[in-house]
Length: 480
Image 1 (cartoon, rainbow, N blue to C red):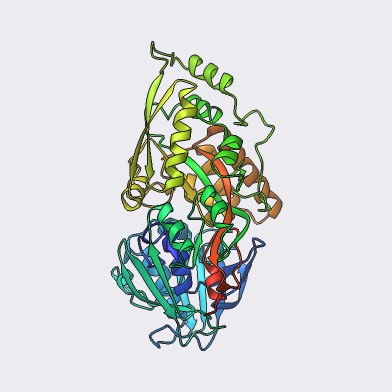
Image 2 (cartoon, rainbow, N blue to C red; image 1 turned 30 degrees about the vertical axis):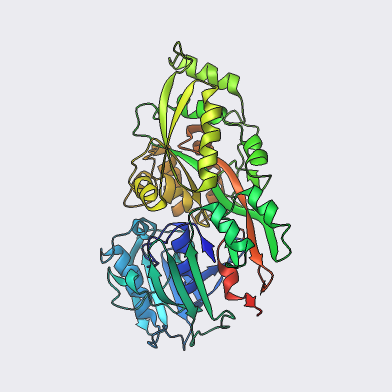
């Protein structure tokens, strides 16, 4: 399987980039599993009860073992949570479990989580892609040789080269059909396409440019699977920047970008314009379309906003310069060039700088940028994304508010949504939260990318997931 970059950490308590989350979800099991209907199913927890809004009781499966033979018990699940909160590992994920007061294990198969206050996002933060149970005592160097209870076990990782996993011999559920998977790190999209074309690779997910996909679709040895996705492409604004802290400039930038045209020209129609962080299929989704805060392409309005803000064009037609950092991913770099061209039409000179992914991601996480394109993968399918990405308590390293956006109004709505036991009140809070974000524009939602998998015909039983994860590897089969 071809991937664009190395996972930053296969410790599920730490890794937050796409490759880490997608690969460690094959190695570890969560307490609960999300389904494609935005619901939750049993995983390590066969069942759970919520006797009151601040108490969750999980009943774990018996007979589950880690890949090294140790039995998995409630003590391991407690350690996983405690080690995130007590500093055993340093992780931005700690903010997601901020409401946990304590964790008890009355017996080896029962886990009780006590909350400081109600947290409707707790179950989502214990599901796949966000959480995986690690063995009791796992420390800060656990990422070097991770041991989970999932259908695959870790074999080796060479940074910037590959990750190797193999079928776990003692998996508690249906065993994987594939004996081994090698995730080959190939940063160049053209090289990835050539590897598939010549048969030296079997599969990739969302890692090719649309024109390459159309070319490979004609290859008799390859098959293309695609479907609507929930992966959100967006651009984050650094609110510490003297220019970008002005909401008029952020809105002008949004109005100066022709998203439908980019979807058709760059992405060959393989995406949907995004109006919210949540995907349209999420029951709590609210659309800004048709409201006064809508940011559909309108360069005349963008120019008027910039003029009113006092940023007049100079003799060269430029109002000011902004820097955009990107990774070296081909589609991302092409997108940045298109944004540069479009924003030049409203007098903004976009200075582009590309870095290999690890460097780019490190700068993104610590807020060392003015503008930066990024993606939410899976995490934006549930409403806790609003706290993780926009709460004033989620500034790095305590969360994913990488643009340092702060809004007392939004924080009050988040607190109310977390505290209420009324579903209708919570829905109303999240609608208002999305309205606040549409007005303030701490980031610009661009589009939801379709999930597109290109694979060899010898790989069968391949199905797409809206988030573009690697779950299909659990059931895929290989013919020889």
